Length: 93
Length: 340
Image (cartoon, rainbow over all chains, first blue to last red; front, side, top):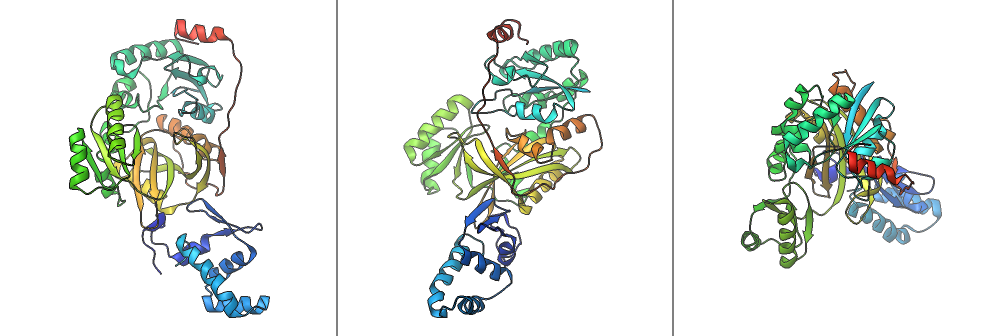
């Protein structure tokens, strides 16, 4: 999971980048290395917190499915889409 | 108390660094303002004890020396922080002569000053292991057309003066227009550069002249004016940028203030420009605990200072419009006597 010298992030891994995100009580995520802020919803914040704990996508689906009593199939598209967006923004690989 | 003269009082929508530097030093130093125009708002802000009009840099060192000799005699200034691009070449070139007048400076060597010229920045960037956008040096419209053809350059491209000014050109006509505009005002060479897409990040720092970065703060501009001047910004903690600043100071033994302008995207971090002076947002650093102008004064007076590279995250800079009323007699006095 090495990242390019990309985004001014040197040898830091993407996993470390997501660990750097500062999440607040208003569901804002702040990236201190780039000065960017992202508005999340509650579930997005929860997914980032789970990624910070090194959970895989399947583990996240499992946990959220149990927590909100929604089928994993139903969750799959939203969670995949959200993780794709994190990748697009260079926050996760 | 040290008596420090400061230039760059043009506190307009294209602000110079003088007033932010004065705000940073007002509690520790006695300040004299050096102005180039009676219309500079900083002349009337009462941030300095007295204001003196200075000869334009284009008049050369003899004029500057005469004025500095007068200031030395009249005010006994002991140091100067020049803050303007246009005057820096003179101060840097003649820094030994100025020192011999009993006036201290904290400036890079002439060699270092030229090293960060835009047409040499590719070599410096290589030494610092940072990417510099592919750049071509030209001196005529025919060369511009040739390079675009030969190198298959795709628009937009950046058209830059070697010292000042840069425009983004979306097509050949606009590139020619920018070429003419810059060359008339600032001369040759003109630089043609591939556009780097990404986000701009900046760092202000001070080198001690012995290879150590004494202080630095990195920011990202959140909003800018139409001419690219910061209006709001935020502190960032970018280790890579801080390391580039440390390497730059170590490699060159840079003395004095500097600003790094870089672009970052998913692929890389690019050097865009190194300014050999404080940016006009330097008070942002002061207000979060890193007083870089004070460091410059301490370096000039050979005081030992501890490096200060740690500052809070998430601090936001907000520029505001201000206004005040003063007596027109002050304007007339400065115009007629060249001092206020």
